[in-house]
Image (cartoon, rainbow, N blue to C red; front, side, top):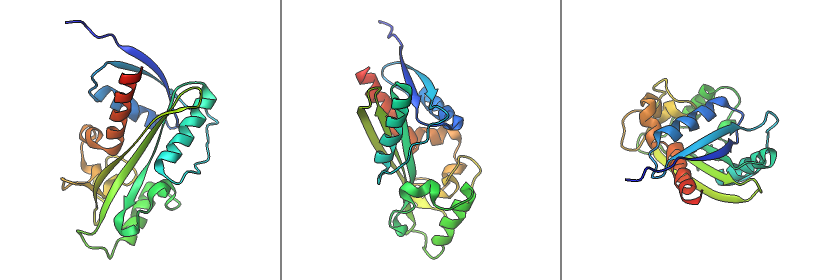
Length: 206
């Protein structure tokens, strides 16, 4: 049996957040792929600060990836993600990180307060993750958008994850995303599913 050669790809992640970079590095090592890839990660420069003027998750991901590609001259990957709640007409959506001032917990408490009169069974929601790849010439070469469906819990539960994880119960589970072991969450989350699509694209086009 012929041993497959590992292919190296330099890639800028359009973020200045080292925690997000670490998350993508972990997903890259954990996700099974048909072709071996060695992703050589870089973070965006310190002055990376694009204005997210898109009206969809994908549009904002493209804006961020294009900015990172222009600044670094390197293939760049960006994500834009958030929570959509049916009973709130899809809010907070692309404004999830700016849903209210303060901490992640402040945003969770505001969400629970908005839904205080919405009963179980009518609290459907979805985490959405859009990923965009832009090459060094500024051309958008690939986008993907994935939804992880579930419902909003009646109260916060769990101390893992971040953002809205403690109030999001994925379909098929009785626990919140914050109560899941990290390896389990990273195997089934919206970001993991979207990133797996990106890896498949890179395998086929590199």
